[in-house]
Length: 211
Image (cartoon, rainbow, N blue to C red):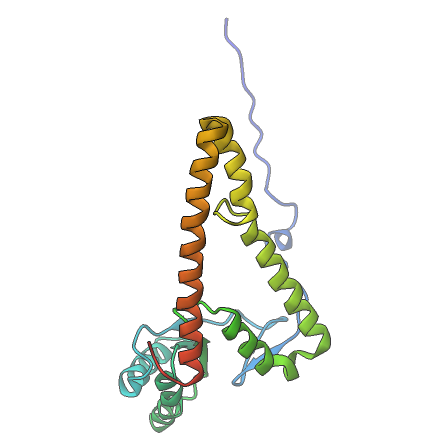
């Protein structure tokens, strides 16, 4: 017994314009004269992998990227030496006849991590620019991050307390409590050590000292 299978090929869209991607309506932003957003063409962006403090090496790589077609070039600014090299990099590019905008990718702090001191310094520095509503949004974001962090199963956080309840069921009440105390003590010591290490980095950054 044989069966026939009829396959009818249909176009994916009735009109060619249905295949075109639809761009959302967004404001236009000028980045060093390069327009981004709205109906402007997609901009090619790249990033250097040099030590930005090496102004000559970074400028050479930016020039190479710009001549290859990059319209925006990002550079890492992770310390004062890198920040101080930016004017020289821009001047070297101008001497070569290049006006490609340089975008700073800032990574200040203790290896990209800031504690209460670093957060307070950053918020106070940005307070005048954020405004009252912006500060409220930032406070809400910090609170949400702390809430999520507190739910992690790490003693002595609340999430660790929940994990300890499961541990008691698994090991028994007496043994579970003993293991819980040991984990809470070890977790508290590690958290205090981490807090001290990050705070030390924040204090050193305040005085411009690299750790």
